[in-house]
Image (cartoon, rainbow, N blue to C red; front, side):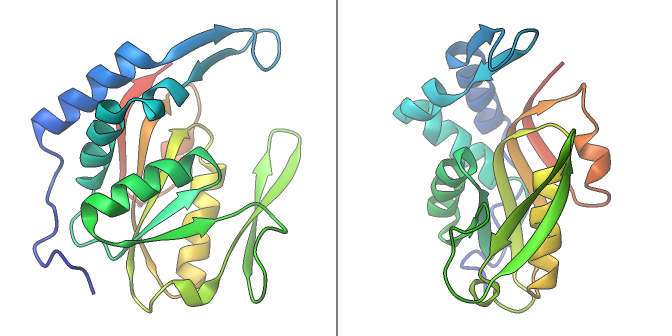
Length: 189
């Protein structure tokens, strides 16, 4: 299935360093957003910079070998996933919020701090036994990435890894993903 029989291999040290430097240089920090007490890290300046986006795409593309499909989580994950898919020469699976996809869907609920949410995919967009790399901007609780991995499995694919720009280490995201390998370009408290 993959157009890269040997896979892209591990992310090179140069790609990881360039992506990390771009994140450090361009991420905008906003105190008390969206609510008082929250320190919000805005990655949109990183995505808006051509060289930074390319560095992130190349670094995230090295997360796992032999990827057949890249899954992007709504919404900033779409942007990163499309860039990673271009590097890997694969397609993109849109992992959407409820009510955005027509026709047959698979739906998966996940827990929020106060309540729950759902993600949806078109199951026919995942080839049988496809190795899928789940891509998002931030890993915190692991709820959305975990739900995406479960959807990939239910559709007949294999969640080969999760690749994110930033992991927030104050949250249990990595643990919530179990045995699915995680690549985070930066880990912040």
